[in-house]
Image 1 (spheres, rainbow, N blue to C red):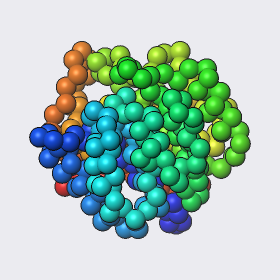
Image 2 (image 1 turned 180 degrees about the vertical axis):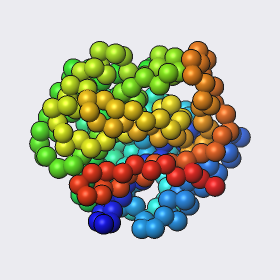
Image 3 (image 1 turned 30 degrees about the horizontal axis):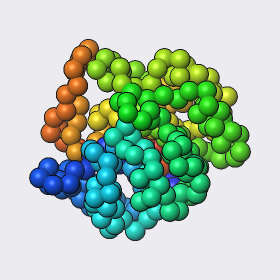
Image 4 (image 1 turned 120 degrees about the horizontal axis):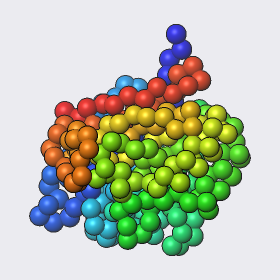
Length: 257
């Protein structure tokens, strides 16, 4: 049996606040960082898949950097609908390569051991819902064509329906999901699509590729099929671990005690 070669941990949606409300979100992210450091072997890298803060600002992003500091491996971030792209560039872009010009989508590609991580920006500034329009799909197609290595594509908004209309309404539009499915089918080196945003563990497929939605390190969306209102509750948090095994990827969800 071949052991796992590359391990990528995925934390998502910590929604860190500064001030009176900081305590719970900060303690939750601290616990998540501690849980990552307890993994054996330790991950090669960590991806924070959006909504780092609840309200974007310098103090908030400084706080997130402080909470992530104990991680000794590379830490990559991506934009969520609560984030500010240019603030992410200012506070986190070091080591991520080119993340785009000021005001542009925050996106990049990096190597992580055997894996290539392609980070998309599905955010629409000022809106909760996302978009993966023709320009962004063209960027993704170009990135995928540049290197045929096993690839994880990451975006904040899940490219699938969840069965909970309140969350599906602030996801990606159908035309973008369908077009992305065709793009994935044309690039079989994409071994997983990973996302956040929904605060719940959900699995699906798109274009023949597995999709994993990561839970939040803090509050979760309860299982309410058909839910028409957004609701977050203090259910147990967790994070995802994606490991290469025999040329594929195994994705695990690890609870945080």
